[in-house]
Image 1 (cartoon, rainbow, N blue to C red):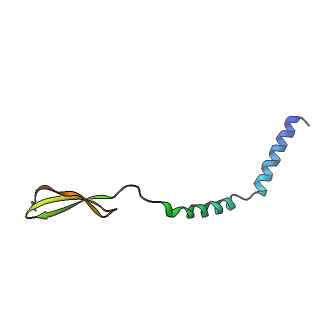
Image 2 (cartoon, rainbow, N blue to C red):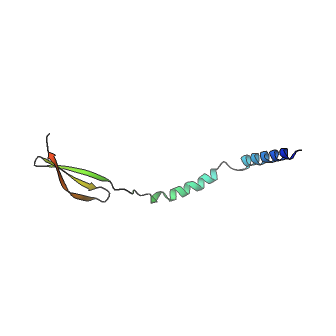
Image 3 (cartoon, rainbow, N blue to C red):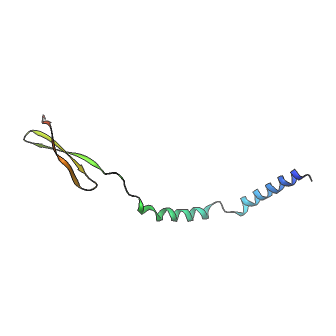
Length: 85
């Protein structure tokens, strides 16, 4: 038998043995899923949730910035204009 044919049959034999003898990755998937669950609690938002809050007082509209993440007001009330229903 030629050396090329020996290499071809050896490669084919190893490939077939790997397909039939090794599981289809189920063991690795089970190990990885437990690692993913372990780190789910470490995810935290990095940006603040900022919202404009509006109020109407004596027919005038005012707005003020509010940080919903820290529950703090940012700045003072800003006059926007006259309220026209």
